[in-house]
Every structure is written in C-alpha cells, then in structure tokens.
Image 1: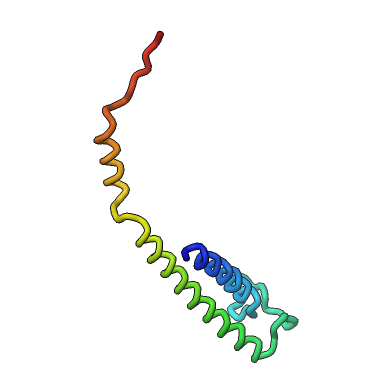
Image 2: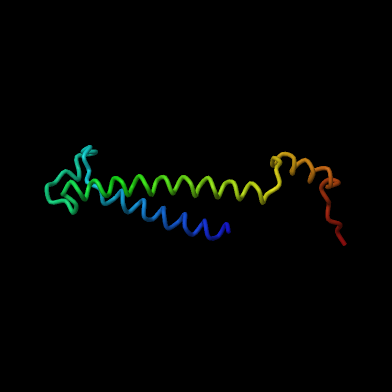
Length: 100
C-alpha cells in the first residue's frame, strides 16, 4: 500500500512541477518571462492551468499526509535518544584488541 501511494505521490509531484513551469509569469521576477509569445496565452488555458495546479497541490498534500500516517503506524514510537541509551547499556565499553 505504501509503495502504491509513493508512486502516485511521485507522479503528482512531476505533474505539479510541470504545471507550475507551464504557467505564464505575471510577477516579473528577475525581469524574465514577460514576453508576449508565451506558450499558453489565452485566458481559458490559464484558468485550466491554475485549477490543475491547485488540484495537484491538494493531491500532493493528501498523499504526503497519507504516507506520514502509514509510516508512523509501521514504525514503533520512541526517540533516537532512547535507542542510543539502550545501546549504551548493552555495551560494556570499548574493547582493546589483544596483541599476539
């Protein structure tokens, strides 16, 4: 189950990146991307990309939360400090190799 959601999560991430990169730059950040010969210049295409991007973002968040919940259920709770303390109690100290 976790692998299926992880594959879907990666596909959604790629689609999200692609949809953000296809959108027209309106902010003029760093002065690039403000030309009139954009790939998607009609308003309907911009509306579709905006809705598609927001939908992909929602799905990305849902799959992220789902993966977190699944991973938390599979792993026992506890901190890394507790694990280190258990390992320190088991070890008797550094071993000095004997020379022959």
